[in-house]
Image (cartoon, rainbow, N blue to C red; front, top):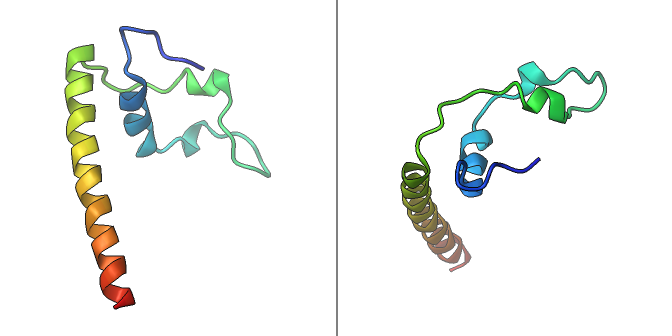
Length: 79
């Protein structure tokens, strides 16, 4: 699956789906999977592309700070 160019930012979609509970769309019995048909049923608010990009930039900056803090913590534990 690919988002429509100019309508959905791929990184925005990744962030939006990373915290979305897709288990209600999973009908597999043995191994969890999300097929394309069920994925198309997922609905969430879709802001304009410029707002998506702004949110992605903000979340990327927060993630970079979290990563830096985790690196500092790992170095501190090794010392």
